[in-house]
Length: 361
Image (cartoon, rainbow, N blue to C red; front, side):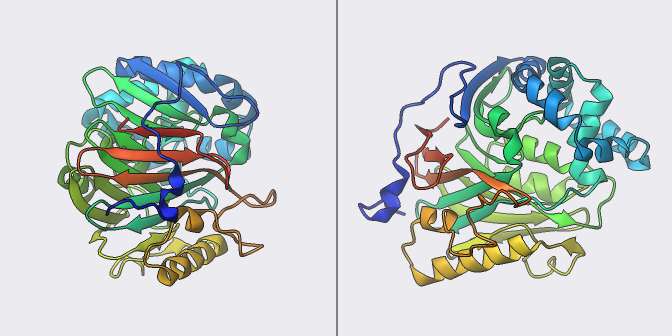
């Protein structure tokens, strides 16, 4: 899809990488950091970056307590073995993160299983999918605003694996928000509140594994063929490939849909044949999806930021900033997936210039 001089150029693309090593912006802006080394080293560095907030906010929280109460869930030990065998490098990232945070490794593993052994309260995220010869993916990352000081755009270079740039949350390895990899793969993740979970690879670890895939087909195959525990919706694109996919997966099903027309997704299953599974659907998810689809239906050449920044619903807006909301929009990202590279920008405040723009990773 050719970029024009109309409103779609609003994303303000700039090929320069705007970061410095382990640098955090002031005044509540989204941080940009760089980490690298062995997978264990990556985990240690990410853990150290977030340690203060994790100890003062995450560990004392009710959510942490509820997850830790599932320690003796019969599925946990089986899932641990599956991850250690299938994903030993990510196992080392979790081990490094535990050491960087100064937390027991068993607690760190269980925390990464939280969306599988205990269904989280309603979370957010809205995705706009625009197919074409050069597809566009746009995504609101909604989460707990209290974490923003240790959220970041992280440029990660693990030895022996693909480099990537990803939005990260404190205390969790990358792969469950949005990212671009050195293979030109774009992945955005939406929480799904599926109620029928089972023994399988945790959704967070599958999200991390996507970042090591060489191709779109490999990424789709990973999700379709793996034993899965929890549920996600994933939007996938890749530079040099005009295809755009939306994937909904649960413990028992995986639906892959090639995106043929502009559409949106929020936080519940909508694909035919999978949407009748038992799931929690928040009022926010319904309202955001309805409003987002209304906006893209009104304009064939819609600016994705017009959708992501929409606040027309005073109670359940697409762009979430109400203090009484269960989640708030922490970042909006727009990815232009070209023939040779991905140009993308991240915005940590609506109606302001991007805080981060780059080409590739």
